[in-house]
Amino acid sequence: MNEPDIYIGIMSGTSIDCVDAVAVTFSDGKINIIGSHSESISAQLKLDILCLCEPGTDSIALYAETDNILGELFARAALNLMTQLDIKPSQVAAIGSHGQTVRHQPPTKVNGFSLQIGNPNLIAARTKCAVVADFRRADMALGGQGAPLVPAFHQRFFHAENSHRVIINIGGIANVTLLGGKDQCSGFDTGPGNMLLDAWCFKHKAQIYDDKGAWAATGNISKPLLNRLKKHPFFSMEAPKSTGREDFNLLWLEQQPGALSLKPEDVQATLTALTAETIADAIADLTQSFDDIFVCGGGVFNTQLINHLNQSLCESHQSAVKSTLDIGLDPKWVEACAFAWLAGRRIENKTGNLPAVTGASQPAVLGGLYLP
Image (tube, rainbow, N blue to C red; front, side):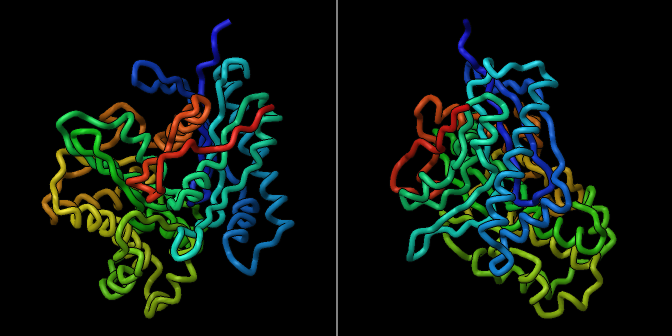
């Protein structure tokens, strides 16, 4: 009997819009996507998750209930994908489930913590597959940020000899991976990606995201508001650094002087500029040029955001972005593929973090293993 060689990655990001599942195999240093599937997150479940993200609205009971509901949803995403592709549990080496982040506090003077929910025991029981979850805390136990974790995957599959590349991942939070020509790799979060854009759009348009940035395109950027937003202390921090909803949220936005007096579409335009310019600023601060800049994540489909990002990169004499599709991987599935790969690293008892990225004191095998 052949050894199981299929890995399934399950990803639910900071934007809390859907659960992505992807089935892949790895061979000869390449990744092959067999198929993919997405499950929507209901409005009530999203509200419960957001309550868990906010001190004062959370509770132990809500945590436990939502942990199980998400576990069932992640299992359903995996099972629907397996049914769609006629994959049997015996063919699956492991499912890598990132989980839904509800709190992320990077280490400062005290130990940090990062909490993801989506009961992996339920996923294992429902799918009859081994599950790897809880990827971040082993890194944090060694003093690391626990994020971003995708740069190790970027290094493995997007590195090119004698070429300097940037990989920009625009999910709820945006991060960059810097790939040098001799296996050099560093990376960090740059700030909000789609998170504020989605939240503001949902509040004012009752839409979970601004499709292609069309609403933002109707507004005008407020330079005073943009300048105030860019004064957030996170942007001036040195790497390694990571961030989340604790730093960038609607309450923070609405507390900025003048934010609520602007037209909603002008705020959306300004938030689009914030994401684009802080990514470009982070790259410009590196004081070096790159041969290629590739982008992945949901933000790649926001035309207005990508146009503004290219404009900002041009101003700092960097090249325009390309899609990771140009180097072999659909930008929509990169992050889910990363956690499928990290599951494989755990099954093989190999390290998955990059201390140069996270700040951990040493490499670590990431994730806990949950058996059916």
